[in-house]
Length: 73
Image 1 (tube, helix red, strand yellow):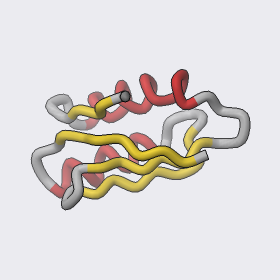
Image 2 (image 1 turned 135 degrees about the horizontal axis):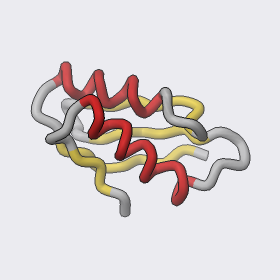
Image 3 (image 1 turned 120 degrees about the vertical axis):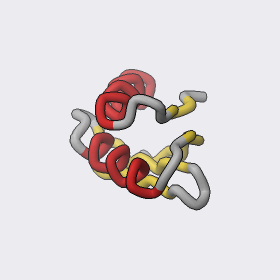
């Protein structure tokens, strides 16, 4: 399953850090962060619940870039 989330980040380098942090999160198969569109596309592992995984993604992103935001709709 793939989902797209709105993000708020200040620079392309920070977006890259967020992308790598999201990819390292348990339950995430792949993640792509676009600084230009301010969106994060997340592909979840089979059987993973996005409602449980995304708070961990957000937490991991904040560890590498504390002023970023991932809007969990």
